[in-house]
Structure formats: structure tokens, C-alpha cells
Image (cartoon, rainbow, N blue to C red; front, side, top):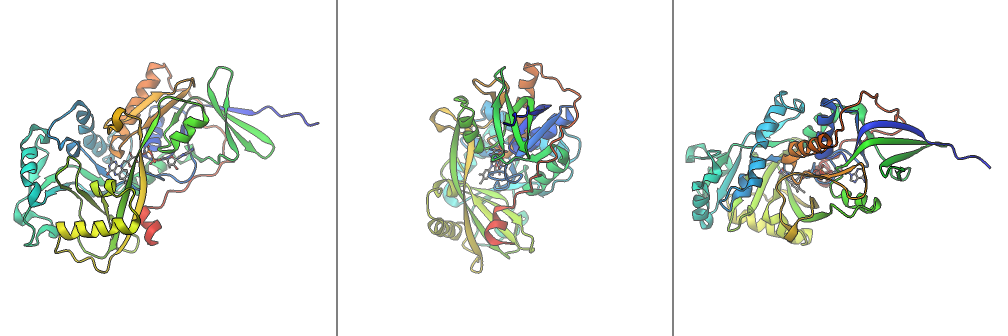
Length: 407
Ligand SMILES: Cc1cc2nc3c(=O)[nH]c(=O)nc-3n(C[C@H](O)[C@H](O)[C@H](O)COP(=O)(O)OP(=O)(O)OC[C@H]3O[C@@H](n4cnc5c(N)ncnc54)[C@H](O)[C@@H]3O)c2cc1C
């Protein structure tokens, strides 16, 4: 009979599970603050929501279309400046390697929504961050004589999300590992804290972090189930985005305001490796179309564009859709959270569960986690990076348009 070998135990301050924007941003913040932090990703960095996002760093305008400026929209209002400082290399995370697609996006309305738009823009909520665009300054797409609505410019930016993921990963590659759950498992230690066990040949290697942060997006739900954690809980907001691959020369970033408080249509443009581009359509179209078939939704998108931009010729375009869920902390009445969420898990001494709820709010999520660490007096230790080099390194996730169109 062979005796079971005791595990080889390593320690670190913080293990992050999930390498989307939330986990990667948090890793950078923690490492910059001196923590011995590691990140574990099961598939590819930026999978699920992050590379599927439209990359808009909102200052909250979109969320105040009802006209009222709430406390929650105040939290988001600081975010564009925070990201800009990071892009310039003077923020709390170094994003100098990331690219900006646009330093503004537009808000436009069809004639039927014009009065609503004027009321909104007259409210204090816009606080000087919106400029009316004169006819001669309109982007090429809206120079057409058939356009008779109004167009405003929001001083918020759109980022090339794959480059953000790459920049964050390249800041600390030695701390990012691929986790294969068929050879890794959770262990509950006598003090009720959780550790991770890895099988490496006939040796068990244990990582006993002082703190674990779950930033696995929708993957948090399964992790909470496996760990027997009943609170916090998650909610999903299903979407189905539409992708249009074309050689139309105009890049465009904007929200079309309709009759409701959420934009009727949101368009962002993303470069492809073959020099073409993809228009990526979200907003109410993607929310209402979440449960349609791809063909039904593409028909709706074509009708919507024909109504809003009848001059646009997309006859040689290729179309595809992407069903994807937004993962959020569960709210009463399925409300939309507009602050990042981070809280301690019930029943596990060393687990924090976090969802940013928006790409924009990743810095806010890191602030929330740092505040929880401070509250627990968890200060950085001077430990070396644990010897986990037998684990693979995760690749960067492909974009949805690379997957759909192959270029
Ligand atoms: C279509 C769409 C458009 C959006 N557009 C915008 C926008 O323009 N602006 C904005 O601010 N926000 C936007 N958002 C919201 C934003 O994308 C998300 O809030 C944000 O990306 C969530 O990041 P995350 O890191 O929490 O989760 P995710 O990006 O989902 O990342 C989770 C990661 O964890 C990994 N993982 C899962 N389970 C495990 C496990 N068990 N072990 C290890 N790893 C695991 C996954 O593989 C993935 O890499 C959009 C969202 C969607 C869906």
C-alpha cells in the first residue's frame, strides 16, 4: 500500500479566479499595491463578456436618459477620467499598451423621439458633457440629406477591448495561469478557508491564498454552487448582438435614442485583421432579440437600419449574431446595477465575490475589493511568486467577429 503524500503547500496573498476585465484589472491594482497576487483563467483571457463588449467607457449619460442624476450614476461619472489617466500611464493601472478606437461617441434621435431628446439634453444630467453637432461637422455617415434628426457628441471614449486585455496581461504575465478544473479542486481547510489543490504527476500541490476573489463573470454562478455559497447570488441579462462585416468606409460609435430610457440601437465599429471592419449592434435591439433565432434578429436589424439610415447600402455585407449573457449580482426586481459589486461570501472565510456589471466600472470594482482587504487588515506580504510553472498560460480570447467571420 502506498502512503498518500502530503501536499506541497504554497502561499500567496490573493488568488483571483477568472481573467476577464474584472480579474485582470484587479490583478494589476493588487500587484501595484505590493500584494503577492495570482490569477487563474480556465479558457482564454477576456472570454465571455469582455471581448464581446462594445468597449464604450460611459460617463453615465446613457443611464440618465430618464432625466434624473442618481447616486449610482454619480459613481460612474468619474470613470472616463480614471481610464484616461491609466491610458496616459499616470493612473493606478498602466494601460499605455491599449488603443482607443474613438474619443467620443454620438447620441442621435429619429424625428419621432426629438422632443424627448431635447427634454433630456436640457436637464442638468448632461452637465456639459454633450455638444450639439452642427450640420457641417457631422460624421460622414450623417452627412446624407435624408438625415433629419439631431445629433449630439458625448465626450466619452470607446476602447479597443482586445488591446486592453493584452496590455493588462502583459503587465504581469508571470502571475497568470491556466486552470484546468479536471486536475484542480477546492479544499476546505480546518479554519474554514478555501485552498486550491492541483495534481502534478503523482504530487499534490496546494495553493493556500489568504484571500480568493471570484471574478469569473457568469462562471461565478457555478463556482458559488460548488463551494456551497448561498449569498451573494447572480442574475443574467441575456442579449443577442448583431455583427455586420462590410467594407463600408465609415466607422461609427453611437446610441440612437428611441421612445424608451435604454437606447433603441447602439452601434460600435471594430477593426478586423483583413482591413475590413465590423459594425456591432446592441441596445434594445439586442435585449429584445435575446430569444429570437439568428435569422429573425438579423431581419429585425436590417429593418431597423433601413428605417434609421435608409441611405445606407449594406447589400454585400455578411451578418451574424452573438447570444451572450451579462452577469450581474442579483437585484430586487431584476434592476440594473450601475455600481461595481464586491462582497464577502457567506460561509467561506476567505472568499470575495465580484462583478463589475460594466467594463467601465472595473476600476470601481478594484476599489471595492481593496476596501474589503483594508477592512480585514490584509496587508501585502513579501512572498515570492509560488512555483506553479507546471500550469499552462492562457491565450487571449478571439473576438466574436473573428470567430464568426474568420478574419
Ligand atoms: C454584448 C455586451 C456589450 C457590452 N458593452 C459594454 C460597453 O460598451 N461598456 C461597458 O462598460 N460594459 C459593457 N458590457 C459589460 C461588460 O462587458 C462586462 O460587465 C464585463 O466585461 C464583465 O467582466 P468580467 O471580468 O466580470 O466577466 P467576463 O468578461 O465574463 O470574464 C469572466 C472570465 O472568467 C473566466 N471563467 C469563468 N469561469 C471560470 C472558472 N470556473 N475558473 C476560471 N475562470 C473562469 C471566463 O473564461 C472569462 O475569461 C457589455 C457586455 C456585453 C455582454
